[in-house]
Length: 144
Length: 410
Figure 1: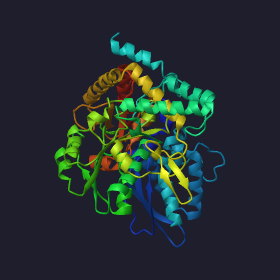
Figure 2 (figure 1 turned 60 degrees about the vertical axis):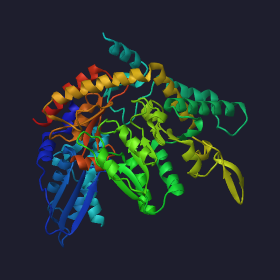
Figure 3 (figure 1 turned 180 degrees about the vertical axis):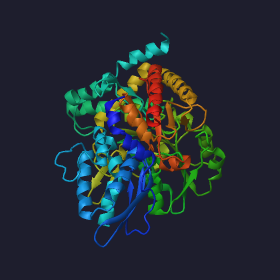
Figure 4 (figure 1 turned 120 degrees about the vertical axis):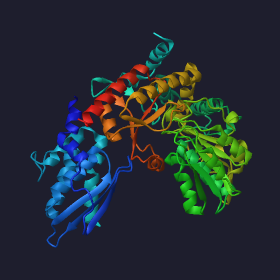
């Protein structure tokens, strides 16, 4: 099988694509945002609970999409749960660099991270938006 | 080797991009002609030659280059007129796209013939480009929009369509060939409009290079298509309209080239077709479209259609045999387009997987989100064929689809 395809669809991606973790709506929640990829119609709704110490206590998503967008959202929720907002923002920056094909100068992510599995998206520039949809929704929710 | 293969091999040499290797080693199999067709050498070389040897603005100067440019631009109009069998060159308006053509009609037809509460009939299978220009009329002026249902076959439900007419129906706008199902519009829809004396616009983006178009025989009042889907350049579109309607409707945009006489107090407007062509037009692209029409005529549109029908039927039957593939629409005749899904695999995955095999297909909602909702899918994979495709390519696709299914369901 082609290396590019194997890089893109690592086992963990296929697994999270088939069975997304933290799928549902967070109750209660105080932050939410919708993610939408107008080019393909994929969409998600992200909800999370930010406590008074600025820690993400719980985070969930619902939506429909391709394996990359579902796996990315699923891995994101796993990664961000329990993180302080400042750390989450650093991860967001690192992640967008990673899937755009540049994994140099990453501040908080390293090869041990499950999010690293999405690095293969860099080989498919038209799929970067699939991988970042959930993250942009997260970023949007912080701004609202 | 049978005739169709010989024909196809000869044609393939005309398209330089077909010798490109995808990811450095895979032969390109281009099954995305419905999104945009590839360009033959004649179009590439002739547009190049225009810039090198003949380029200037059109219809303005009196010098040699202006004459040469104007001649080419207007010659392209003649070719389009013949291609569509319009009565006169005055009925051929060059636009930048088919989309612009629909926007032009929506805005100017409304201005002349409609008011708040009047109705437009569309259908559920329309491309966004034949929805949003009419949404603008609904949002800005209170025009009512009605949508004809579709049957499971992917065709418009004619009875429902007919039931939508009232004495407030002012215009109908429908796709001539569905960009999702590849099904042709039932000609009854046009005759119903004729009977009720309501003008009809046909969106011919997918039909123009894949069906023989005769606007007089069709009996449509407007017809739009784009250059880039008919082997010509992007940036040029065509609006055909009957001279009666185009004469009565007001200009769309104001600017140079569309005027009769201008003073500071006001202006008179140019005669057709210049009235609707404000500003410097996409003149080289228009010429390129004319060359693309020459190219199709040289091969023979009948031959192209026969060839595409053969491939479409072959691919349809092959896909139909595969149990994990769901084809959208019925078993009725399709023209050059087939939409499908692999069960439990998102169309994005299918498209990325095929991409590394060198196969280009479209994945997504095809600018038909209301239709996707109706089908109960988020997106589909779409095959679309052109003059350069072959049965062997379909065989390679089928092998790749099996590999794809295996990969994602392992």
